[in-house]
Amino acid sequence: MSRRDLLVETPARLRKGDVVMFHRCLTNVAIPVMAGAIVATVTLPGRSAMADRADNLIASQDPFGQLRTFTTNGLFDFDNPFFRDLGTNGRACSTCHRPDQGWTITPRDVQRRFVESGGLDPIFRNNDGSNCENADIGTPRERQSAFSLLLARGLIRVGLEVPPGADFTVDEVDDPYGCDAPRTSVSAYRRPLPATNLKFLSAVMWDGRESSPTTTILHDLAQQADDATMGHAQAARHLTDLEKQAIVAFETALFTAQAVSDDAGPLQADGARGGPVALAAEPFFIGINDPVGLNPTGAPFDSRAFALFDAWMDASGAARDVRARRAIARGQEIFDTKPIVITGVAGLNNETFPNGATVPDPFTGTCTTCHDTPSAGNHSVRAPLDLGLTDAARRTADMPLYTLRRISTGETIQTTDPGRAMITGKWADIGKFKGPILRALAARAPYFHNGSAATLDDVIDFYESRFHLALTPQERSDLLAFLRAL
Ligand code: HEC
Ligand code: HEC
Image 1 (tube, rainbow, N blue to C red):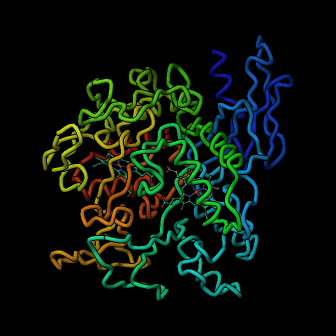
Image 2 (image 1 turned 30 degrees about the vertical axis):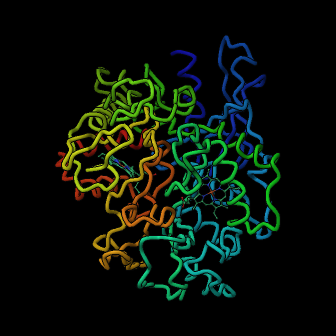
């Protein structure tokens, strides 16, 4: 067994709820820093102690194995302002971006916090944690109902004003919560995006609202940190430049991925490149592997955006873990190459890109047409897309339904979240969201901006109903195994 294998095999299994930080510098002992007792002692023969110091990794159990975060800063600074209460309502960034939840939140953890605090944990604030702004939250019963979307789906309310000069108006809202908000605004209920793997971002926020054509992602993230502090944490003052820089330096050094699979074992074994350490070494620039010719190097698009598990394609043997490894590799092949007839996606089909390329409708692509960034899976250029997730036909009873009217023509659209249109004011941008990074998925259900897919199975159901993939049961289970290994 190689040294690398040893590194990824320890500790063999964490208990649910454990978050440990590995510290193997001199002692070769995994020392938990956040919860639980020491879970594993590791002796790695023949290692020079400091060369492999690993207080730069934290691990936690998730439903399908072990999640790990690696920091390129050398060690985790839990005194960083990211973890500090910088506002007036007790919240920190880490209130909604939890290391053991893939740096977002999961309903199960939110529910646990509700029970343990009687609904008084700082995440339960009625500025944006509740379905309605300023909801009554005086009693436990009121809190249970005021925070129902946060508890059920891990959704935060994002209040957005219709931008000045918009070419549409909000005519009506069918609001299950009767918030009685003015028609000049929209409450969008959205999943916190993971505050990790930020190296790969081409746009900040689901609707790209923190990004602009003239600023860098690092600049956008600094602005985002301040906006989050003023908004989510209801701060009385802006962050200082030093605080912003400290937060950005902390979060942009984080890389998070599934590191161990309960079925397949260490995801870096035998030549595979899963886990966060390999991810940190992946190159990225805006436009890398772009499918419509926007790669600044001129390199053609390679649909094999994921090659992490190539080495497992021909793994031989009938042992359970070897079979699981082959399934992950086959799932990767499906993700990279299975033809999908992509049709009716605003922002892609019939869209003309800055280089003059136009994508026809229909267009036969793959999952990686939209999830094109190598090893990360987000869209490598800013390309907000409307998959139809917010259409009236997919509305569930717990979501508001907005009727928007186009001023020039009088036509109307019903949507649960206007998406990018609330930023640009453009009718054409209704329902558009960015293609997010697809790592550490197993630890952070539910999925999509509105948490409408409770599991990765439900994600595949959505794509089946939307693009008629016609996956065989075997293909579906392979694709699932791959997504769970990311
Ligand atoms: C109350 C919960 C909450 C708190 C507190 C919070 N966030 Fe977030 N965060 C969210 C939500 C919700 C989104 C997605 C909103 C959207 O896109 O419309 C998000 C998005 C982000 C993103 C965008 C990632 C991407 O892929 O575009 C970053 C980065 C981020 N938050 C960092 C921070 C930082 C830094 C802080 C502290 C200063 C913070 N957050 C505090 C809920 C929270
Ligand atoms: C036409 C472009 C497109 C194609 C094709 C596509 N996706 Fe997506 N995907 C997106 C966008 C855009 C989102 C975000 C949508 C939202 O939440 O509003 C997304 C979200 C996801 C998510 C949820 C991520 C999260 O953090 O919530 C998963 C998982 C996913 N896609 C997997 C797949 C798989 C598997 C395939 C192939 C079967 C696929 N996608 C094909 C554009 C696409």
